Image (cartoon, rainbow, N blue to C red):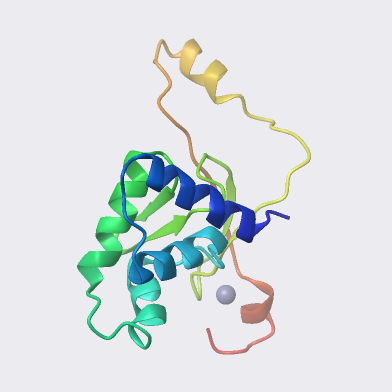
Length: 148
Ligand SMILES: [Zn+2]
Ligand SMILES: [Zn+2]
């Protein structure tokens, strides 16, 4: 388990070190990203903070995410026609389990790294930039028939 409180402190100190001010709105966004429960979209983060910060815009959320992306402190998962989803807890490539029904996303548990991206890239003569490993399925809630 990742300690979201420790992760939040880490994000705050890294932002401060780069001269970013931690406004109450930014703090609220960071709290959600430090936890990244279910890998929220920017819209989802916006929905969660707008009650407390009615003057905040979706652009504020995107700006915060862009800043963290530039620092490699958030992982962006792109989904064609769907909104991008974010993981501020583990900002490095890792296995995700994606529900094709309700779009829930969880971190996958694996015992060892079966695929070595460095090796795959090297064999093809590529310089490795990153990798992604998604497992698609139907989550327990959807299997149980509860509406997504
Ligand atoms: Zn589901
Ligand atoms: Zn993740």
